[in-house]
Image (cartoon, rainbow, N blue to C red):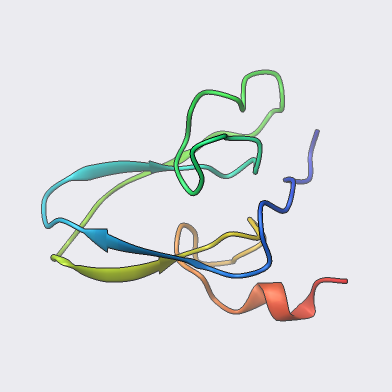
Length: 80
């Protein structure tokens, strides 16, 4: 698998906590979207691990085609 599976064509709003680490699912196979559950094994894709810079509501990409992962950049609007 070189292309991620589209989990949903909308972002996931999520309340991030400053200083906390998160692992955003980049393959689209996780059952705990938008986060990684290890389902990427064998796909050639890896989760994007990041640390929240501030406590806020963030919009995490659901289509897995963002150019600004893990955050939504509106790429879902261009998917068929």
